[in-house]
Length: 219
Image (cartoon, rainbow, N blue to C red; front, top):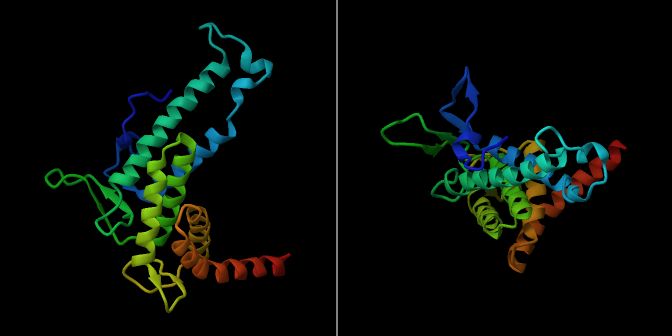
């Protein structure tokens, strides 16, 4: 059972040979948030179940349903803790998510570092939106919108008619990253003002159309 006093560090650092790692990957944390949020959404309304196995009391007087509902509450707290990590610790001065969070320097303390990658931005935007919807916290949606603005400012390359794979380069993003960014952008665009929505549409529509045409050709 996840403890209600859970700290974000316990969730974002991997265990390596039984010891907590010094480095975490922002993209992994974002993926984890979205996965937990999907589980919480999938179990919405479970309180109304009529399934016998979920209603049978155990020796402690609790039913599997009781445990599941309690676990969902704890998972929402975990989503909040990890989303706070992404929003407060993983984002650098330029407003982009850094790929690594390193706590190995005992003098300088934990720091986010590395060249911001487009895939991490897309995954984080999605995760923050998932968190906002799952625990009804508008602050994460606002952070996702701000992150999208930073992506437009620092990663868009007119020569590519899209975003570069990394902040310091002009390399075209691969298909996985392109699709992830299109999905994230389409979701966050709903919360943008009309001018920013129009800007996003100019960027995204040709790529979405091309992917749709490619899918039709395959089938």
